[in-house]
Image (cartoon, rainbow, N blue to C red; front, side):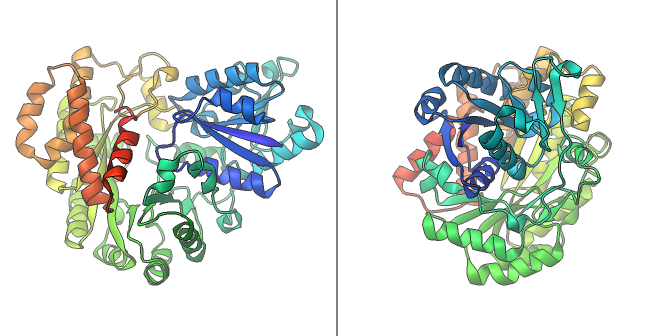
Length: 481
């Protein structure tokens, strides 16, 4: 069987698609990828003639993929179209959309292989009972023709999965292939229940189906990094796990083996209430150059009651101090425009970041993603304007909450200049005055230039040629912010 994945863009290596591709190829199927920023997906489908068209969808991108899918189904006969990723997992009603043949909820490697195998041997009617899948049968069954199967247990032993199929991405995105920075995933799941995150909702879907947090063995992770180093340019590793440091035992083994067997500097995510002097020392010993941690909001009520972060300002500032004094660079992640918040609450977040002194402060305008606890709170309490289809694909795009236009304009400007205000606190009064102005391309450019410089020189430092700098800048300038 021939499976075509369609991606709107590849900001960095999409781990989900790469894992699905490697599983399908191991099962004997042919896989290709169309990246819309490099080629027309419809033209790619006409050339490849897939049996299955597959889309990994986040909330905000669903309308784009639904439209592309309908165009592909018109142009290529007999295509079975499937959708997976966060949006279908938490918004299963998507299965009733025109042109959608099936949606996959949760982890997809085994589910996708089972589906394609069944299509190969028995056709569309043979797939209807496969775990993790929902299907729509045009009303000839109960509940309007929607068939929903339970999820199978979590993949417990992640080492059994083949390495993600990087060639699939790199052959279609040569800039990513040439990049000296590449991304890796060491585990899945998170034990925390932050209300804005999908992990809590996913644990409800998988209740009784296995452990929420699972991690690959140190040896397996190192083997993958070494394989990539041997086949592609690699001078800096980014571990994209939500929280890289959950297991002290795993981290200690990693710190002992990784410097000897790999020795490439890396970036990872931590959490303020987990940071200790010993942990920072172990990370430094392992070769860590930089970390990121979520501050999210400076207001205690918003952080601990609304977001359920369960950490104090004092913990955040102490973690920042330990990271700095331990010789690591660090970034923070933050949200503005939360329900029940004010612009003054958002400036409190700015002030806490100023005190923490990060190498760069990321900030996002809150988006109420469906089926997350905070997303449902936002909708149920009347804070949301419109529907989930109005959410932008980019988390810093705009607010869909019921703020007045002055508040929304202020959020847009604060998002542009938040990191600049953290780096140069004396600009904060000027930022307050600029919030009366409409957003414009100059503000966008200033945001991009400072972010690019800080990330390049502090967070992910690699030596780049002029060509590489130009390619990287052009690649990321194309991504709206």
